[in-house]
Image 1 (tube, rainbow, N blue to C red):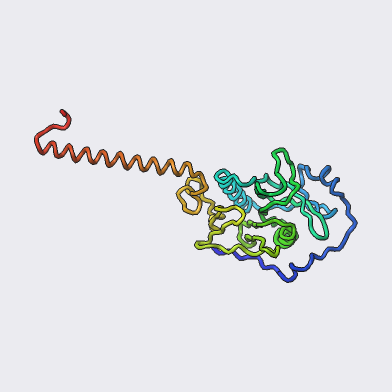
Image 2: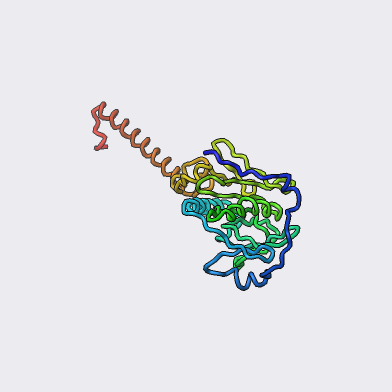
Length: 269
């Protein structure tokens, strides 16, 4: 399955983001106190402005759920990072403004200079990887995920940014290059995307829609090294032992046939 990479103006990217100062109507302290834990509406904070996170449709949420579990399998095998829970906030410091963004989920590497503590309800550092399930309820929501956050995450130091869209209109995968610019991650053979920040983590683009089960992935060379590898090894060992038993039974039957040919009843030996 091919994925259309969302095109952006890199020349415009290299200049500072235009920002028209506005009088903040909500301070960051007020945001954390009054809006961060709102149970009905998920708000992000953009330099004093509240921005309501949009809603994804079911097919996109199912894709994001499968991908979230895939990351979990990887981190159990490679405990090099922590997976954030859904919509955890983190501070994003940009040249001309501050923000609190809440990606659908993210990754904080163990080597990140800001430790991610078990009791944290938000993260004071910068996520190493952000994943957004495209919010497609409004045009402004789509623009925020594909353009605004594309600019902001790169400038803020998020090393990889993945956009998931159940309809594959906006699905895209980016890594931050040495100039601090997001560039598309080029698929490997068979349209496999490989992460740089999570060594060994990879997935086939078509599987975002096919969503194979763990039982299917343990026999798939794309995933078998990090999806339940212990189960895969146990299965392989069981198959080896089964083959050994079959070979032993075959040898015993051949010996019995030779004894019968000599007039000897093998059951009386």
